[in-house]
Image 1 (cartoon, rainbow, N blue to C red):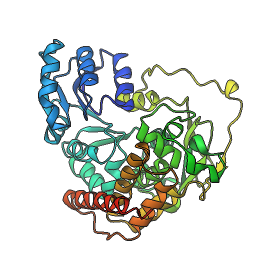
Image 2 (cartoon, helix red, strand yellow; image 1 turned 135 degrees about the horizontal axis):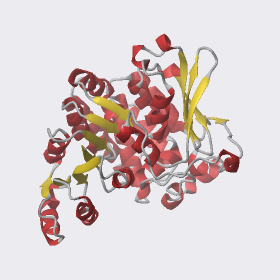
Image 3 (cartoon, rainbow, N blue to C red; image 1 turned 120 degrees about the vertical axis):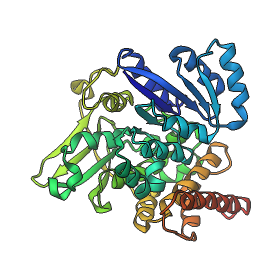
Image 4 (spheres, helix red, strand yellow; image 1 turned 60 degrees about the vertical axis):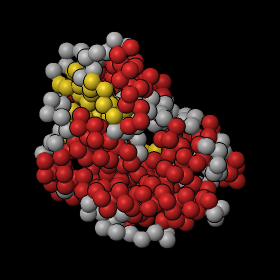
Length: 394
């Protein structure tokens, strides 16, 4: 029986993780569930899974969580609140695996705490590697943590690489990693119409069911840009070894091209329960509740080159990763602010990359050699974004 901590249990990845866990009651026990601010949803999950701890990241809601748990009859679940509590459950001696599914920079500290505690980290939080790639991978190596990627693309690459890939991609005959992207809901929209895109349109992904922030990132393809940075760290790849290709069906989740001309791909229905089940059961394969892939029904697999004019966020991510240091941290922070403003109806869809590029080009880049430096760069980028937006520069 493995004790599982789910950081971000009320989000789409957290809900899918609980669905897989519920299918294997003799394998997994939910040790801790955490949410940012959704007390009611968190308590509802606690009623079903009876974790030892429930944590609300918003410290001001700690009392509300305690009261709600008692009213729901969850006396065995201890209520905690705040970032320190998130880090505590992630590093707890009784926890075996930690699903890191908190969206955004807020997930960095508890995910890093899990790595430093030597846990098996099921990484669904891109920002841990985007913001602190070298720092995070050093912690994984130093403390003997086991890192398993949950993003469908990185999970596909992981499955398509040889077991000894850590010797170096060139040493195992890998030429390049090919990350597939659906292209989101606007891959065929006229460029001049993108300025009028609404939040609801941006969140209506054609293939995947995701949270609103990640859905917008998919529509701008910043999601793919962040995945490029993440793949660089996960697989010790050069940026030149990572290619992005549009694949509208989202059937091939990513590929690895080898020196001998072989291309190995991982295919499956677009359902996050597949990579979640793969990581939970690794190295075994366990049932995920996902329908089997019907290739005859799909009928065709299409591929298109990545359109740089339509998706400038991908270029921005490559450039930030090449600059190194805190540049990816700043990129991520600016994107989070821009997406938040877009979802609030205060920024046009096409202004998201314009704002990011404008501020990032003027930002000072420091060495990302400590968590304090990284968090300071994140905070400064958010302040700069606020200033630019307040002054109406865009």
